Length: 258
Image (cartoon, rainbow, N blue to C red; front, side):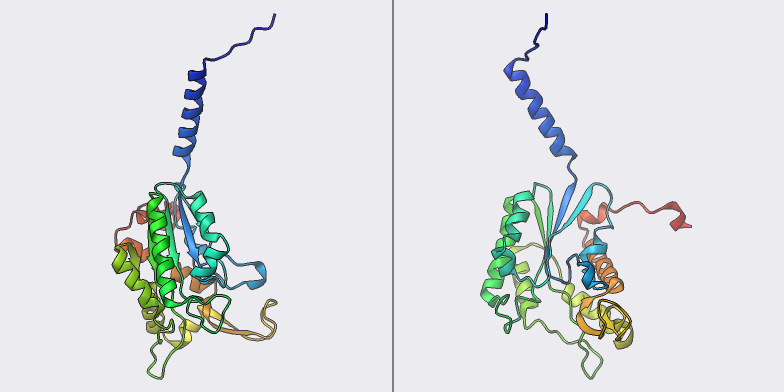
């Protein structure tokens, strides 16, 4: 005779709850990246163009997962309209982080498909911060990284038409954790100078790379080297300000300490 063992309903519910709680506690903290092409993962056809979010993902130990949702050509407006922000909010859990960095495309008034008026840009950044806090997660707001345009005095000029200042205003008004990457990267590449900084951006002569047969001169997007160095600058700022993420770095291989 086959006997069926049926657990009491309360016991079954308890087991389900425990399994669910265990699963939730085992989930690594997620760091979502919301931004544009200067941060995003690229397709093979775009290499060696690299967003700084790509090397940044390898800085952390197993307790952290970096989920890069940044996308080429997106502004705060189109990131919302395409459901990309909604996707982050559907997956976010208490204790997670969201790094928010927009501005390059918001300020492109001649590109109507992505342009975001200043007041809307501020409102969108404020919404992002409010949404993340409401989910009991932590936002990190950043100004857009610099473009590489030197003036006659050998100094890189600001090129974001005041959108970097709008992000600074939102940071001050909201009290959010803030990293001024526009200033950090502009200072960094200015001190490096024209020739050396060029090696960090998408400058490729003709007939050298199959993706760019006629060459490319692009002072907005980073190559592998530039992306890695910008990611390192982000980490340095997190360390400087004592952010908790800076305590979750991967352990170095002992041979790298010799």
